Image (tube, rainbow, N blue to C red; front, side, top):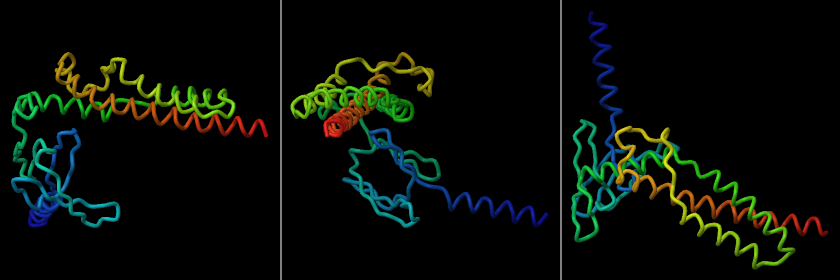
Length: 204
């Protein structure tokens, strides 16, 4: 009996010591950390790097939606303020952030990157050593990613209640669009460089 009681106490103490505070940023990122200071301008916290050493970081309060302490108490920093462009209510912003998080976890920009890689490589090779076309294609292809509507795949939606929510879709698209643009730029740029390199190798 004493052994079981000691084991239970040990487990509870272990869970307590390993518990972390949680910062939910407006970008949708979540940070497990130890909050050391909260003032009117910023939140200071400590996180462990890859080597296990503590690193002290400060984030502006305006970048943070809420902090949840290790006792599960959530303190919400965000508030609706149409004067500075924060038009959503707290609940609406929570839904918007859910869209951001689902896009971060589920949106795949690789198809855009691969198409850009192919187009860039073709343009670099067909330019026959010229520079204008290899530069023009990556820029044009990247700008093109700002036009089409981002399709939200149902399997990436964590909460089915968000399926037809416009605010959720706005949050999802903000992250997906950024990934799509960066993927297009990365793929087409690398492709253009490879295409030019292959052209000179073949010619020589």
